[in-house]
Every structure is written in structure tokens, then in C-alpha cells.
Length: 103
Image (cartoon, rainbow, N blue to C red; front, side, top):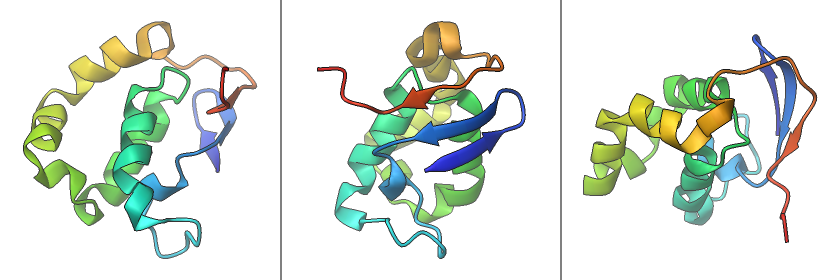
């Protein structure tokens, strides 16, 4: 997936397509949605701006935030993003490819 981050530029994000159940996303597989949502939220390499874009455009279409754990995550999302994103919470202009297997 390609995302234009207004703070850092173009981002290429791999293995999170199913977190975005948008009408124009043919790569969304509902059975992978929860897994891709957690990957988007918890992976330090995905920008906070991408998470905010996802939240603004997909929050109501995902059943994840209707679960008990999802509700708790949603209530404390800014704190959790600061914890999960660590040094990448504030975006810097870079060229980065994210989501690749580090193994």
C-alpha cells in the first residue's frame, strides 16, 4: 500500500491492506482484518499519520473496535501509539519501506 504522509512523504506499507475495508481496496480480506489492524497499530515502522488516516476512514467499518480489547485500545490509543511507535511517534521526512519480514 502506498500512503502519502504530509509530514514525511511517501510511505510504502506492506501486509496491512486488510486493515482498510474501503470500497476502492480490492486487496482487503476480511479474515485478515484483525491481524492487519494489530500489525498497523503495533509495528513501530508504520507512521502515526497512517494510523490516524486509517482511524478517520475505517473505524466504523471494522468490528475490531467493538470488541472489549478493541474498545480499550481505542480509549487509550494516543498513549499506546506513543508506546508502540517509540522513536517514530513523530514522523520525520524519510524514505522507508515497512512491513517486511525482519527474519
